[in-house]
Image (cartoon, rainbow, N blue to C red; front, side, top):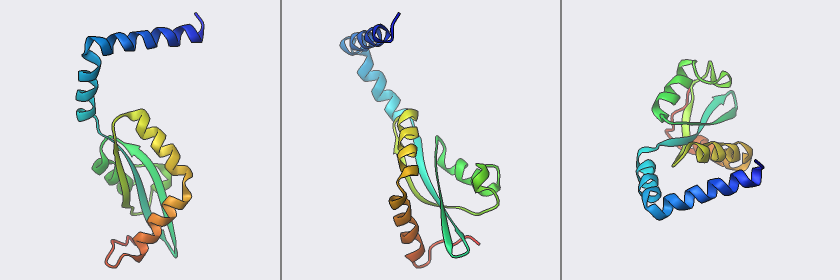
Length: 125
């Protein structure tokens, strides 16, 4: 079977589900239950500010793992502060948003500058 035929078959199944009413109720329940987050962490290294972008389904646990040294290799050995987070409906949406944030250096730079200029901000050593 060709790719085009497979896509057409999947699209037909989706429309059947929508007509039956199951699709909308199922997606509404899934949106309530689902919790995927994209986050930006910040860390001071001398005069520089490093940022790290990632996604998770448990934000507090993930930040604790980064700070405990069991997170991603690039975050080990430093204390990180949460600069920004977004809640998304699905894993693919979170992964896509992470991909875009990793390429948007201007956004991360603005977050880092706002964090540095905030009086009384948590500054890890």
